[in-house]
Length: 234
Image (cartoon, rainbow, N blue to C red; front, side):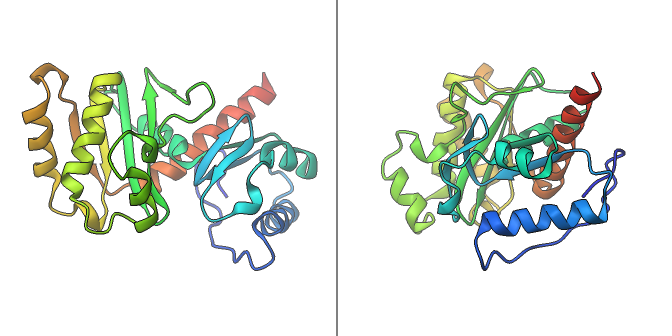
């Protein structure tokens, strides 16, 4: 919960013992009761969302095929946005850049897999069906298996190098943000070296290591909510 200035009013975690959708419905009802001035609902989901409908999801299979945006708009009677979490993260990263890059790719490896978000000239790039950034589908040998084994015994410097080189060839970003995790601890320079030895100098993006994943995610949620509210006013 944030106010219009972006100040956090409330934060917490919920146990979904009776299902994720019911837990979220109960949470929203409680928040609306506590904050009747609530103006918008924004959600970032570990998966892919196309026009509000969950197409792929990690950990909450019951949400697959559900139009969450429409569901929450119908139940809460408020404007709602539901997107993949990495789209929100990349939006939040770009929002705090003083010298904004033309194209930035944010890459995160978490408990349910690896994904990325893309911002091009200030706009999040979703792709035709909002599938952009689903890195497990890159044509890297055993890539889908890595998602199931959580990268057990994988050379992560080489893996990240392949991902960055793919983006360099297809998108040519000027910056790539790697969110810190135990798999790449102490390997940033090795990743940079792999990219430097396999890409032309003019195609090598600035590779930045960040420990601000949660902050960028929350900033992205706030930016999305602000956009929804501005749409209502205008």
